[in-house]
Image 1 (cartoon, rainbow, N blue to C red):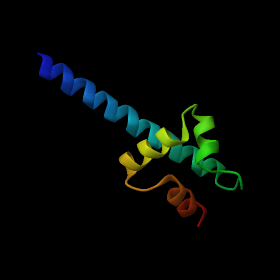
Image 2: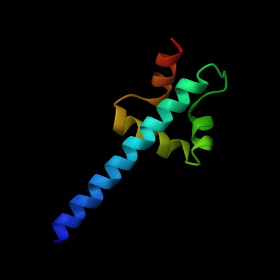
Image 3: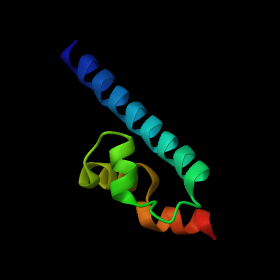
Amino acid sequence: VLEDVCRFVKQERKNGDTQLSDRIKEYIQEAYEDINLGVSLIAQKFELTSSYLSKQFKEQTGETLPDYINQVRL
């Protein structure tokens, strides 16, 4: 039973992180023209620390947040 609970919690965390990355991507798509758009601005928007936001985004997408922002801008 404990193993099942642990698996469930792990899966829920993964789903939540993926949803966060998706929300961040949507925000970047809407705000990419803002010259001030960066990790710290996005972290403020989502009420997270910059380091946590960067780490989660990299783990979920495989790319850094600044790289993704630049890719969208291009």
